[in-house]
Structures are given as C-alpha cells and as structure tokens.
Length: 139
Image (tube, rainbow, N blue to C red; front, side):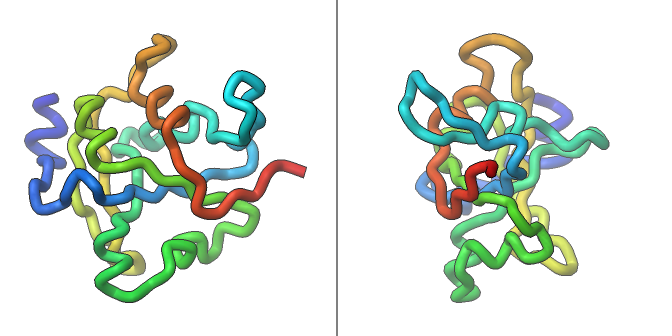
C-alpha cells in the first residue's frame, strides 16, 4: 500500500457514506442469474490500463456543486453509472483520494490492489455491491 499511501493518500474528509460513482461501458454490464439482476462485471472496477488507479467521481463534490451525478457521463454515450461507497472501498484496502481534473472537479482516484481471480478480490466485492444510478443494459 506504500505506492497508494505516498501518491494517493486516503482523505479522511471524504466520509464513509460518500458514493463513489463509476462509469460502466456496455461491455461490462451483464445479467447475473445468481443475483437475478443486472450488475457490472468485476472488470469494470480495475485500475486504468496505463497503471493509474481506478477513477471515480465523488458524490459530495457533485452535491456541493448542485450537479446531477449523470453529468459525469457527458461524452460517454451508452455508458451506465454505478456507485460503491467510500466505506466499501476502504474495507477492501483502497485509499480514496480526490484527484480533480481541469474538466471534472469531482474526479477521484481509488488506489489499492484490486485483486486477481479470488472470489474475495476487491473488484468482485465492488461489482457485487454496486448500486445503479443509470443502467443501460446491452442491446
């Protein structure tokens, strides 16, 4: 966790009940027969392919700016929007770090090992516990 602690330290001002929104492309949305519902695949919660931590959008910043969470979908036609809580991320050994970008003030980095193929891997926990805000099932 040294890389995350050094580069993306956990921000205690982001409360555990803060929703962390994640854009989900159609190819990461599937119907889980065991849960009898649509859910994101665990691959939707991996770190970026360039090695950067997983991106998310802070509900607290969106609320402060009086923005609907769906505004983070601008330019991402066909994407869904799901959320996990900061508490769930932290319980899975992730740091929650604000990382505003010039065009998106609510951007955050969720840093930590997302796990490989273990059933208890953080990315699987995120996928199983995610809540839909905008759901666009594949056609």
